[in-house]
Image 1 (cartoon, protein in one colour):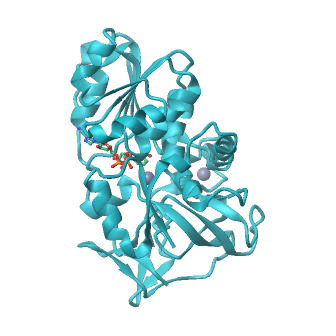
Image 2: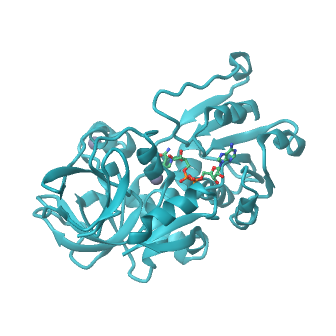
Length: 350
Ligand SMILES: NC(=O)c1ccc[n+]([C@@H]2O[C@H](COP(=O)([O-])OP(=O)(O)OC[C@H]3O[C@@H](n4cnc5c(N)ncnc54)[C@H](O)[C@@H]3O)[C@@H](O)[C@H]2O)c1
Ligand SMILES: [Zn+2]
Ligand SMILES: [Zn+2]
């Protein structure tokens, strides 16, 4: 079958990939559509170190093709959004509703694929840039069949991460002021999450002026091209600042722009050894800095919730799809994302 493999030097679209059948507790999913998130690019650039060869892609949706023994939550033919966690379901973190903290979700490094006689890794337990993948059953969340695959695919990372960061991690209350640095797939979902939460002001910052229209469409009240312009809009600073790029200088800027009692939420992922600085004395004013994995999401609950909001017209998914590419055109999708030509997400189709 076809898929996108990164061999440690470059990525390529191959047609000699295979994936094993689902074992007990696993499902095989035929991918319908998959979004290109910056984290896939970060594997290629080395910002996110990952063993190779690896099949890329972690934001996808598809149709269940086969289920292994003991699978009860989905059946053949179900349409599903895939989550990247595959948590164990049995530890104290799973039991307390924090699957993103389940220790089994990191470093397990499954290798369900075979490429040119060698086992190949699944990126983020998902590998959705392939015609077929095999995941744990609890990574597959069933959705209604009328939801278009491209829209559904983006729930798997961008929406869970961005909206979840606002509603689950920061718990932004109505009336709060919010700053969003970086208006990509993640930042746009932070913006629409903040709008859902009833934020009174949502200031979007992106160095790419082409992001203005979509930022405002998703609910931003203001758009500026530099963090330097934010104090002109809110003298005292903001209650919540989300960094959605992955640059330490922007983490510093986000913290510096907090009002008393403010919270900075770091969503961007810089290189694994990066360190950031902040003024300690300013933190004395009840300020906080929060890390955030995958929107602190509970995928089985939140995917259903977000898809319901979409069907009610309260969450934008179709508008997140800026361009579609057949899988063969992966290079064009990467080029367009890196060149800043996409207002929101590029989506690969199969
Ligand atoms: N925490 C998590 O669980 C999680 C999940 C998914 C993605 N991420 C990370 O989030 C980050 C964003 O991902 P994405 O898919 O939205 O990327 P993206 O490429 O779609 O968007 C990044 C945006 O940042 C803007 N930008 C770049 N430099 C800037 C600057 N100096 N000031 C302001 N804006 C700037 C770009 O113009 C672009 O609009 C990445 O680091 C990614 O790895 C984290
Ligand atoms: Zn992602
Ligand atoms: Zn667990």
